[in-house]
Image 1 (tube, one colour):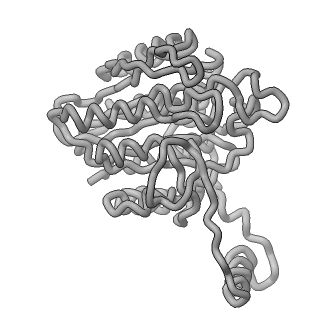
Image 2 (cartoon, rainbow, N blue to C red; image 1 turned 60 degrees about the horizontal axis):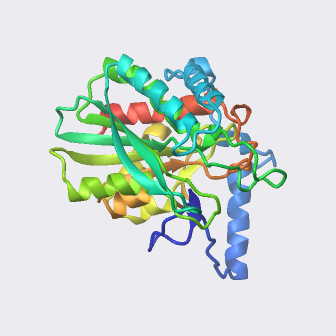
Length: 339
């Protein structure tokens, strides 16, 4: 995943490149006044704390503690890059977990190429189906491979990367959500898809998103008997200081604008203030090939402001059960009323 340029043309990696705007003195003054009005009351008191929800774990019906335990369980496996023993161990764990809860689990197997040697690397998207007979479906997804090495670590870029927030957190929320799905009725069938090869890279410029591209091509070229009404990608959603803005691609594409607004509307109703109803970054992530290749109306729920990103510091202690509970709650409530 990367931040990128304005969402007029998607490329194949996760990055941001900033936009440069010329602001006149009057505009700067207006923004400064708006900032002060937003965060200070008439007595000069700072209200920044209001940007965070005041919930405790026990206030939220989505079990953030258990989701966090799943996160730690995945990280305890160690690195889980594509084609590794760690990935195989993770796949076995996840298959048992989802099948125990009544889902149908299948693997979409393919091969990627090692970006440095060119050797074939076995990869597999893990697909978890709930109510597989339904012809109208919702796609909830995350990537479950880890970066092979902590490439941005200033001290040890050849060290160990366990990917707690990027992206055991997204997978763990789906693991916990799986506990709820058999207990509820939904208008749609639901698929979880865990993408492999999202960042099987050894340098930032190498090709990302192998799994989501393969999935999108298969969906396009071999149309299934069902249709995805919506898609939601969960990536980097477990950080302690959680702030989830509306990703700019999702608000640029006309077909996904209603989905973004509806999920942030659910968050507002629940008073989960960490879902901030303003656009911020355009992120190149797995939702790009799903939308551009597969024509699936898919958005990205992501908090990219995470200093340990792609470093050895991306460990469970940087994540929060409370943050995971808030995200899981919003997604769960949206699913119940998805139209």
